[in-house]
Structures are given as structure tokens and as C-alpha cells.
Length: 363
Image 1 (tube, rainbow, N blue to C red):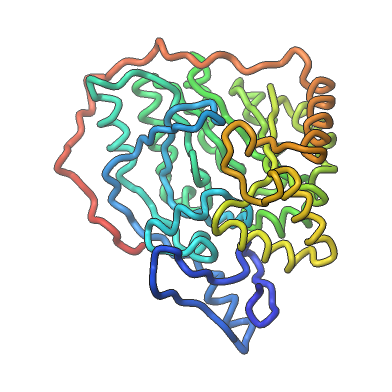
Image 2: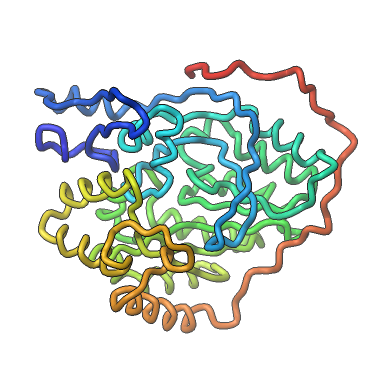
């Protein structure tokens, strides 16, 4: 729960949690000054991580891609429901405030990608940025790792997908237009709410809903195929917004839309419930009960084919609502089939494999 009963502004997590893999943990039990509290948890630390590989196989039947790249580990966006939170525990951090406050920066990602694409065994297949954390979170404005990865994709004419909820993606319209000219790119924009008060609580360090709509419009007008993900849908929190969101993104030029319902596995269960009770104490029990109803009586769900959409009366109601309004606003629209035939290995710009950045430096 919130420290000393005070909510932490600008963060999704409201507490320090123990790392399940460590015997000892740290945290705050009492803190007299709210200013001191905000100074501590409001600061984000960026650490350089010398990754050994960057192209990750995706073995989930629920996802429509086989490869992903995560230029950052941890995410300053701070969404309390984020399914990627437990991955931070493998790095020795916690899945709550550490996930938002300590972001690992993989500066050597572009070099590793080029190595992979130059491999004789590599066969072109769409690579998605990112499978876990947002490739356009705030530090990307400075580091430009995602842009450098796109530059590699352009040189190799390799298909790529982007998933983001940050308007910063429009910075790279020049590269995305180049890729789109040969059907080498899809961009998925996540829009969970158009209610700015809710957005500030639910996704505290993301672009506003209005800016995301402008992003969909700007990319679409530039000829870049845009898909919108209404994810996650949380009963009694944002499910009532589905018709308005679908209408707005269709008007902005999106070519399609999909959704997932919220599920809270592992440490996410505690982070999300504490967030819910801190900000919506009047309906927290109702929301948790409805989520559990969609997942076989549990707020956690690891069942392939079920976990993304849920089951039962609440899930079916959401599915029907989404289907009706998607048909109404997206009739005749679709994404182009991604092109893999343009891929080639350029002869210029060979890697210097001995030019490796130092590992785990603090920015």
C-alpha cells in the first residue's frame, strides 16, 4: 500500500516489493516528509547494460510475431498493470518501483542487430520493437537507440513492427516512410483511455490520449500503416470507453484495432491491486472480482488462447462490444501484408566487433 498512506505521484507502483529471487530486500516503511518521498522515487536512474544478444525468439501462440527486440529493460511509463514487471527481478531489482526507477539501456543493440542480420543462418521475419517495454519511453529522446535500430532495418530492408504509447515515434517518420514504401513496417499505438484524469493515474509518464490520436493521424497521413491496441481493458475502469476510442482512432486513420483484457500475473498482482485500492477504493473489490471472473476465478492467467481475451460473462460482453464497434468503424480496412522479399545484406559499414561498450555504467 502507499507509504505512510500517501500515494506516490507520477508512479504506477505504490510500494517497494521484495524480489522473489533474493533473500534480502530494501524499502521504506515510514517517511515523514512527502517531499523527501517524492524526491527519492521521482528520480529515474539509467544504467548502461552491455547486452550479449538483442534479437529474442517469441514462443507465444497468443502473439502474431516470432522475434522481438527490447532496447530498454524496465520502463519509466509506470503502468501498474504492465505484464513485463516480473522480468526486472531477473536483473536483481524489484518489480514495483525499481521497474519504473531503474532503466537498463542497451546502447550496443544496433550493433548486435546488425550482427544478427548478417548471420548466414538468418531468414528475414518481422522483428517487433518491443516485446516487453516501450521503445519510445522518455530516455529514447536522448539515447536514440530505437532510431538507430530502425536505421539498421532501413539499410537491410528488413521488416519491423513497433509497439508504443509514446508520441515520440513521430520523430522517426522519415525512416518509417522509407520502410513503408516497401511494406516493411507496421506501427501499433496503445490507447487505453481518452480520459486524461484516468491516464495520469493509470499511465503516469506516457503521452496523453490526445497526443496519441495525433500520432495515429500523423503516421497515417505519412502513409505508415497504423494499428491501435486498446490494451488492457479493465472492467469498471475503462471498458465503457471502447466505442469512443474505436471511433476516434478510426477517424484518425488507423487501419485496424484489437484489444486484450487485464491480467495480473506474479508481482503484477500486488502492484496493480495496491494501485487500484489507492486510487479507486470505492470500486476496488468489484474490479478485482470482475477480473477474476474473466480468468477462471483468479486475477492471474497463463493459459494460452484464453489469457488475452478472458472467458465468462464479463469477457464475452467486452468481446461483443468491441466486435460491434470495430465492424462499424473499420469496415473495409486492413493492414498490408509485411514484405520479407526486399531483405538484403549491404556490403558497406562492416562491424568492428572489438568496439564494445563498457558494461553496467551509470549514466
